Image (cartoon, rainbow, N blue to C red; front, side, top):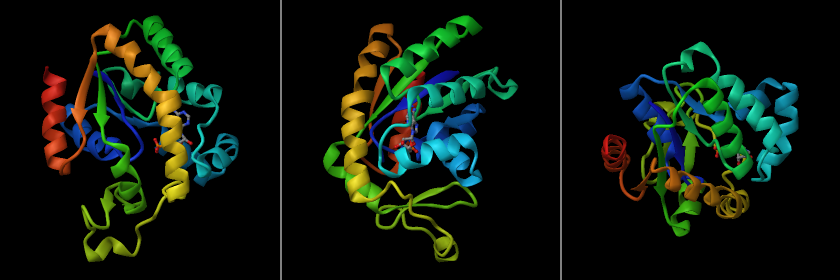
Length: 209
Ligand code: AMP
């Protein structure tokens, strides 16, 4: 299975990807996670990406495209992969498509997780990430157990201002890639409002359809 998860910030892509890859046994390739790791390690790529990310802007296409194409060419992705957060622009979608054609790969599914803008800010400001397990919580909707609470981190781009900026980028730059996948017949739309379990059930059904 070679697939892409698309959705606005806070749609639940990271949470759902982590659940699905366990069932599907394919690597979860999150451009945001890779960029955050690069920032943390202080690599040249991380230094370049940091300012864009904090402001809720998109990291330049050439940086992200190189990083992801190199990642999907690794042996563990030969049998399939789940992309989360990439592609986010038309040039990224085109670069991915060209690389997959060159590799003889076909894209099986693109799942769009839909969540109304009104819910996005509330989800983002309450989101907390566990750096040890990678698990994502929400202070109100999915509260963390007390024993992990002290180590949780709040992403720098989960402030109200950065989330609004990310929403603008989503509608302006990412949403236009949806029709490309719709035209290829691989797109499935999933309602992202509900409990994580409800959304996982909808995603599993969408992947089978
Ligand atoms: P995410 O974890 O997917 O919400 O990504 C966090 C941030 O990383 C985004 O707001 C962007 O600044 C950057 N980023 C992640 N993926 C991409 C991408 N495909 N293209 C450009 N910037 C990206």
